[in-house]
Image 1 (cartoon, rainbow, N blue to C red):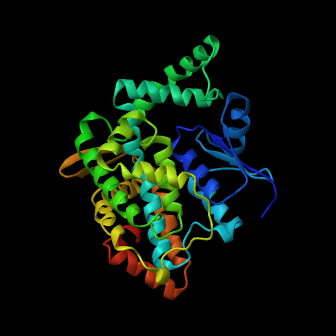
Image 2 (image 1 turned 90 degrees about the horizontal axis):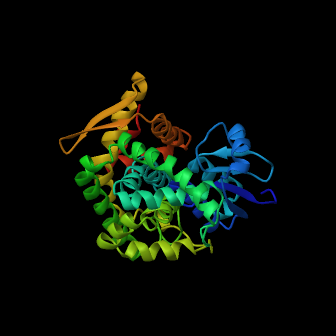
Image 3 (image 1 turned 30 degrees about the vertical axis):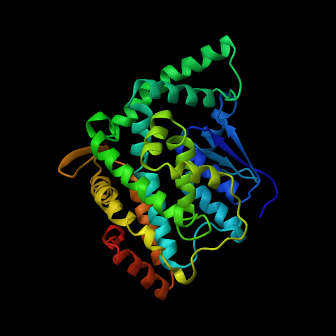
Length: 344
């Protein structure tokens, strides 16, 4: 462990920024959450090689991006505060659920933020305020408001375009909202029984859910109203979990997977599973768009090489296990109908 702070640059309304912040808070890692404002943007993008957020600067001066990579780095550097289970079934299912949050429910986040005019302007203003480095807890001067509005005017059409390329607009609202409501209700029922997906301790997958809630689903007015209608207990869980820190809690003993998690896996297969296989083929073929169907309705989503890289990373993780652990990890996937997603 190196002394010093980890600097997390992003904005509060960012899905992935809040995921990293959630991990740093829970793991008691010295950190500061800072805006990726104009005074640091050029340096960070040159160092990280991306315009995406968040980017994190480590105490020794590394600049890295991607929420999963950052949390994995935390997990390696602070092994006494691990958020990735060590036993094979819990570990591999944690990785799969983490991947699902990263690569699929961004659709729901984009949908609820940008689908309605009032909510879209609210989201654009919040993002613009973050990127201009202005605090959210005070009124703005006229000049500051003009600066924020100028950025918001750029962000709003970008957000709606992003919603479109993910097939998350009004034409796909019925399927998307139905799936998301089922996901929320399952999580609410599970978290009523235990505070984490795999027991008392929060895992990387829990922290991804927590970050998504803080950035979008418990923050944006349209999304929050939807959550309050379908799974209000998740709003309470979000506030409680956000203020939790690692106190030595454990996961379920014996590599046990809670029964209350089981309804998540058919839901994952019915949506994300279809996308993951179609996206794999599109990446291999070098196609810009991934086309597939859900419940008989065609979807066309911008091909995501990162989702295929994440799938491959899970395959590699199983391959790196001992033979006995790899067998147990594969059995955990196979018994839930997921193994074919993570085979070549």
